[in-house]
Image 1 (cartoon, helix red, strand yellow):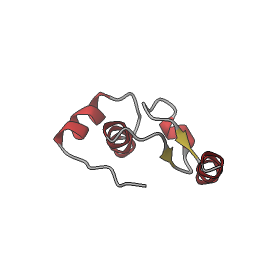
Image 2: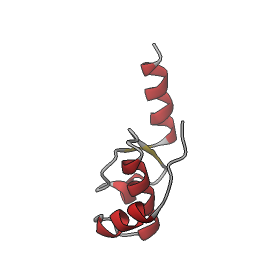
Image 3: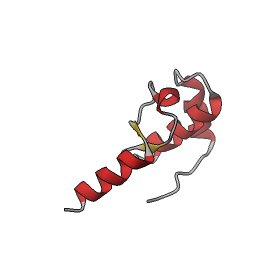
Image 4: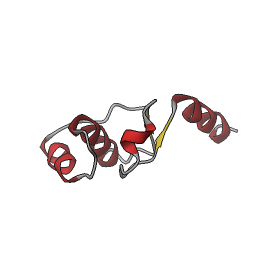
Length: 69
């Protein structure tokens, strides 16, 4: 797991994203820039239109377990 950087490019991308909340758009833009496979959140509804798939922590744990087999 990595922490995605947040710079001018991600801020500009966040302004373009069709998300209702700027902070959520920043998270989505950083995840996209870092080529993340998922955004882990308990609030899936806010990331419905994000460029990176959002999953719950529980879903992420199951995905991690399955991929390690």
